[in-house]
Image 1 (cartoon, rainbow, N blue to C red):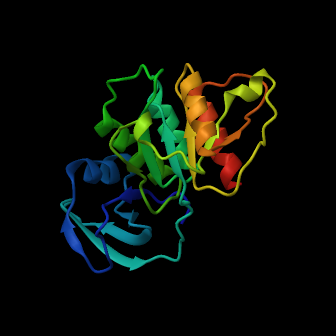
Image 2: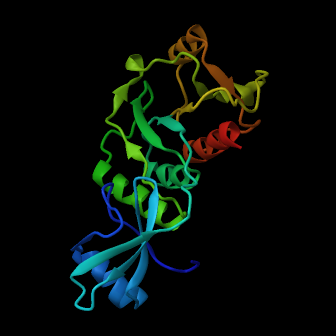
Length: 218
């Protein structure tokens, strides 16, 4: 169903449902896409759906055979100035859960998380997912269990020999613009966390997140 609009309608949709539709959804279908048929998804499932003639209701039809391409990866990350780009790219890569973590060098302290949820929803619609990743409440670095997780280790850019991938963990952690602090590196090392190298250059945090995810997924 190439080029058919895909719209997230929540976690409780099922075949046979008929319910009022949000005004922005009706406007998008009627005036932007100029069609009433579309694909509705949520909770890992996708359905054929139709907007009523008056644009007030949606009828959910049969479930399609499309399988959710999302994975079960959790991305821990320090909020950054371009958190929107980080979440957009990570959503496209199939991340299931986002865990914001306040590190010693985190400087982006006023993130509009409602806007971020809208961004990951739109990224899910565009990337053929059947699910929208969850954004968890912020935590402090000291409250995170670091045991066995994978983290993007920028010390590789300064000559430290590190593996470039790790398939043994479903959790990956990337730091802020200024990187992890010495204290945080010590905490990773003491907990047996797995540092992976992302190359010999220092990457922007949002790009580092995308590459780190690919190193444990692909």
